Length: 550
Image (tube, rainbow, N blue to C red):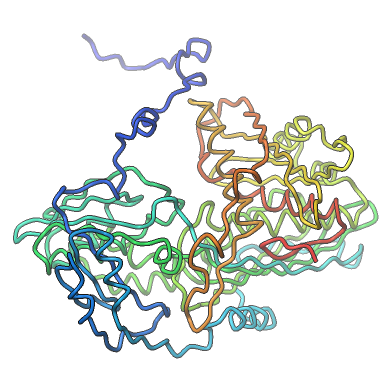
């Protein structure tokens, strides 16, 4: 057959799968129970390890007494690895119960930022300093002295990922090879971490990647792999490490706590000028880049440069300012600045990353400007978005879907629109107030994610992203005392319950553009839409997450 010089793509009206495919290849195994998650995988005869880790970030393990644990039936060994004590047993239960008998002494790190209150105070001081890096500085406004000045400060807390499946990993280490069974979002990082711990070439490490019982950014890290490889190398048998829920909650890589201070002027005609947004928070890239970068570099390459590169990236961290620096609104004179507040807390990527806090902060403040201008929230946004913009198109679609402005008696609506990962999502929250608390009755969503292959997946991801965001908006908060996380399980880090889950309506906008992301973009607009609905219902402008009515 002669190789053609030009390939003609199929016309859209000939598509048989694109836009109508409605199945997932992983649906059946997940329904019938045959799907293998990390916690299910590995040799059948593997031992199980449970670790007691230092609860204080940056703290030290001083001593431990394992006499009682070693007498526990089924226990094989007890020893220290890094800053933790590992209990190895013939099963999870004996390992767990034996670990509870350990007598371990830890010493907290000496830090001036070991408590939530100290970090909050440091954010306040940062706003008063001149240590900001400019990440956007448009030409000055031609309305410098005109309009009402609106100022506000918003804050969001550290957040855990709280995945359904806690962290785990299984390893078998011999003199010549290392096999790892894990559910990872970055198996190349897992392979590199294992190779470096063992001092071996990467090609001697095999990673059998499994389904994830929830990732959301948490399983980009390979701390579980580092632990299990160190244990397995010492034991000489296959070993599975299983984290309890408390381990998972208190040793996460958290969504960074972030603060935003904003100001803008609103003229009598509703025009906005002198938008200034200052962002204070730690840099994810500064912490993550040195580890991830090692997996990118050849194994022989010097890694010292990665810390330097991480520090450089931390000055203008794109993940810290995304969603704020690329503001879609046509305001006059936009300025965005960032202050990297380094904290002794492990931080990482959380579903939608910087957009998760930028969406809340920016879209809540946009609502404040609309109220100041005396203009309807949807109309105010439309007035400042380009007529042909994807944001305006999505906004119009969700307003129509939600019957904006015509909510049933006793219900109140709030709106937000945000672009992340190439996808524009507009959402409307519809709530009532019961017993001085918001009750979410319904959520509406319009999404423009380019060409859609499987509409069901788009619907599912929008719904999941919204519920993920609602959980954080209503309940999510990680607090610190003496450098240790105070929350431990779902009783004090609450997850949205089934009876609190609203009906969610999703409309997908037709598009011939290239496909873009759907796993994360449903999350950023949800919190501000909910907060704006609460303001409509109560007149209280809640500028801090989680949302709590006074």
